[in-house]
Image 1: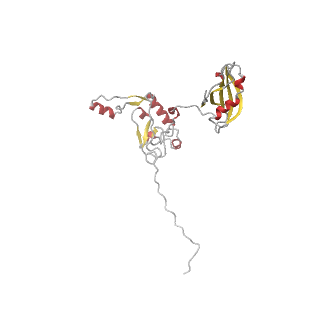
Image 2: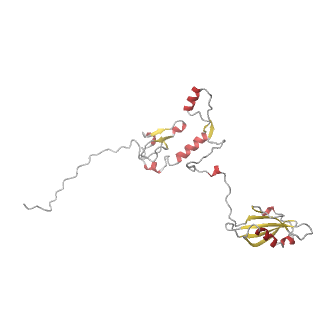
Image 3: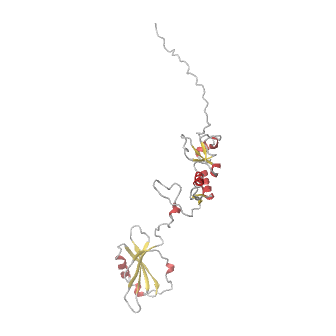
Length: 258
């Protein structure tokens, strides 16, 4: 059989441990090496030979390819009964106990982190997204549909209670909640709920969140919690005080002679 080279992983437990090592196949080290060198010249020393079954032996060679430290070439050979002619079954590149392996594959939707979406990126939403729930479907009555759309009901899906809860928790514990550094440094009376620049959100999220509209603050245009705060509160007033005029200073160190 012709040689086939592939990269794979297989456990030694899959081999038949009770098989007797065929001496003819075990002596075919050079034949096994030649099967590898047809596809790669990075073959190191012969490591060992293991019986896989009756008259089936796998030879292991060190791999010298850059980036494959600890990997091994495995060449399986066999022969028919009462024949001294050894043929190649397979050539495989296998990781050894000290081989550097790539981390396990993780689906893309599990690798995403908040803020990963960039300019021009498209992020498809799964049909079974737990954060969304079916919304109001248009009935065809223009008067009813127009009112429904204004109320936010004209969308195929809207945020589910779970989605709103996760968003609220994320916002509250983030940089625009009560524990943010800018909020902790602000006066206790300077909470967003009493600020003239605080625009309350509609719906259930409005009980806890609004949008900052103070152009001079870092939270401008961002969702903030009602107990968030900063030094740009609308009611932080600095009383103007009269600044006294500087005193008149006379220089008496010198007297002009007249």
